[in-house]
Every structure is written in C-alpha cells, then in structure tokens.
Amino acid sequence: KQNRAILIMNKESDRLTYLINDILDLSKLEAGKIKLNIELVNLEECIDNAASLEDVKKKNISFRKMIPKNMPLIEADKGKITQVFTNLISNAAKFTKPKGKIMVVLSNKEKDDFVVVKVKDTGIGIAKKHIPNLFNKFYQVESHLRRNVGGTGLGLPIVKEIITLHKGEISVKSKIKQGTSIIFKLPKVKEKKDEEEKERK
Ligand code: ATP
Ligand code: MG
Image 1 (cartoon, rainbow, N blue to C red):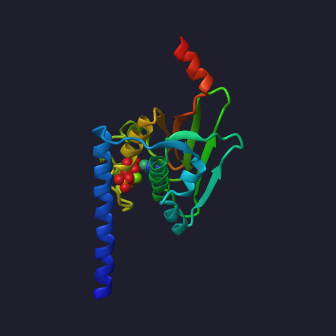
Image 2 (tube, helix red, strand yellow):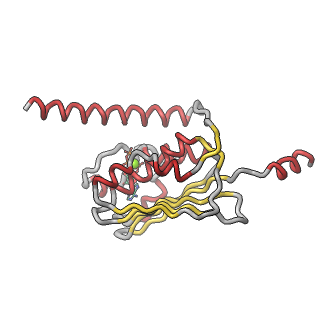
Image 3 (tube, protein in one colour):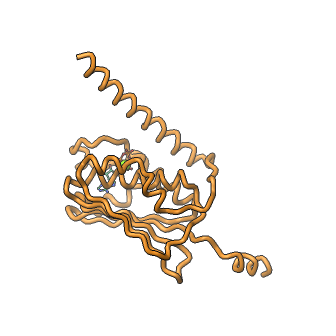
C-alpha cells in the first residue's frame, strides 16, 4: 500500500515539475529573456534526442524519419530545437492509437532559403475550427480531453515561440480521424558571399 502511495506521489511530483518548467519556459520566452545558444545543428540529432520518443515506444506506435541526403546543418539552438521535437512527438504519440504511425520528414529544396520539417501522425486529427487556436496558451480541444491524456496546453505555444525566435514559421494541417501534420520552416545558413554582397550594398 505504501509502495503504491509512493509511486503516485512520485508521478505527481514529476507532473508538477514538468508543469512548472513549461510555465517558466513560456514566460521567459514571451518576456524575451531567452537568448538562443546558436551553433551548427544536425536536425536528425535533435529528433533522436527527443524525450517523448519513449512515449512512442511504450505505446506501440511506429516511428519513422525521412531525411534527404542533401540535408544541411542549420544555425540553431540545439536544446531548444530538441524541445520542439519533444513537444510535437509527445502530441503525436498522445493523440495516435497503438499501431498508428508517426513520421518526421525533413526536406531541403536547393532554391529555397529554408528547410522544412513535418511531424506527421495518423491520429485522431483536429477539427478545422480549432486549428487557429492551437498556439494559444492553455488551449486544448475539448473532445480530446475526454481521452484523459493529461497535459496543460502549453506544448504548442512553447514550440511557436521557439520557432519564431529562430525566424521560422509554423503551420498545422489536420483531418479528423486521418491525422495531423505540424509543419515548420527554419532558415538555412546564409553563404558568406551573400552576406558580404549585402554589406557592400
Ligand atoms: P502539454 O503540451 O502542455 O502537455 P497539450 O499537449 O494538451 O498539453 P499542446 O501541445 O499545446 O497541449 O496541444 C494543444 C491541443 O492541441 C491538445 O490538447 C490537443 O487537443 C491538440 N493537439 C495537439 N497536437 C495534436 C495532434 N498531433 N493530434 C491531435 N490533436 C492535437
Ligand atoms: Mg503537448
């Protein structure tokens, strides 16, 4: 009996820690108090380090990465981009039934000055009317709450702040009962030549 009580306390204190950290992260991001620690980053590494990959394994959902050979390193904050993948994969895992699929697709078109990342799932999907609200703090789709999956509605607002700080963009595509794709773009490293040319102008 005592063991069970301890396990519950442990789980609940973890939950509080996550909640407090999310609230702190978001407040700092919103207050402009977070400085990015920019380095050359391999996006695949950030995907592989996403903490929520554990949730995927536990739930028997298949997980795939699609990464083209010409994928460049990008200038970004490794920890923050890892957090983006953690939050998006956590959502995909929460709202996808066992035997479903999650895919992370990276793409790099030579002519574009950004790379594109898609986190796709075959989950329950999101009705159109909710999509504009998903990046608002504490917003959760009511009908999803019945699933008892937990969470506070801070994951996506944090993701949006991080992507915006990196001068990127984010959007959502979803179809009820078919699945959801969260798509974001991050700027590629500019070649020195372009920069110098701009300075001369
Ligand atoms: P937290 O991330 O704070 O633990 P959360 O996951 O509920 O809680 P968000 O990540 O901000 O919060 O997501 C907001 C809501 O958007 C979710 O509650 C859910 O209703 C919906 N949602 C997000 N991602 C998906 C997805 N991949 N499939 C279906 N619904 C989603
Ligand atoms: Mg979430």
